[in-house]
Length: 215
Ligand SMILES: O=C(O)c1ccccc1N[C@@H]1O[C@H](COP(=O)(O)O)[C@@H](O)[C@H]1O
Image (cartoon, rainbow, N blue to C red; front, side, top):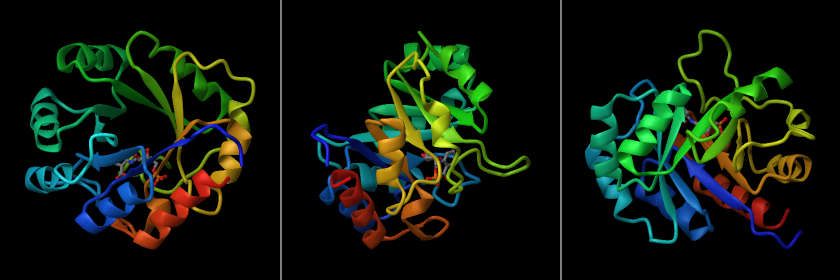
């Protein structure tokens, strides 16, 4: 086990029990999805209910797929969001959202091959963090949250333009290796701590967070 504290985001939470497991297990961030095609998407009422349970030391991250302003405004208020995670938004749109909301923005960069990492540079000055996520298959309904991982060695020697986090196909069994391989200081998981898509599993959440802490 190394000395550095590694952050962990448990994403796609939708029940009080699983949210409490994430917070109790030491998550640094919890993720609320606001994307209707996702099995994890939240209503405003559910987002309000969950947000009220999150202690101040844990960040509430809203996950969006190229959202419009109305969805952003409603979700920021319902989820009391501290951070906005944007999938498929352009750097210009990310910069605009960051400027108008005043919230930190994480830009997802979808990775399958090394050349995909070049997109990270385009978010310098437009976002606060890059989230390296696996590219989901062509035609997939979701750009994330499908348990797909990428070759972590692609990040070796890459000069990151911003602080960053690792996601895509992480689970309690592979996250320690992922951290050792990439040097990630923040990891993000959704389907790897579920029993079926959209249904989080408290045992897997606890196991994931323990694996991060005891890697
Ligand atoms: O989780 C979702 O439903 C989702 C929907 C739309 C965009 C992103 C989504 N999730 C994010 O995808 C990555 C990886 O998820 P997984 O661990 O591979 O299932 C993660 O950052 C989630 O926040």
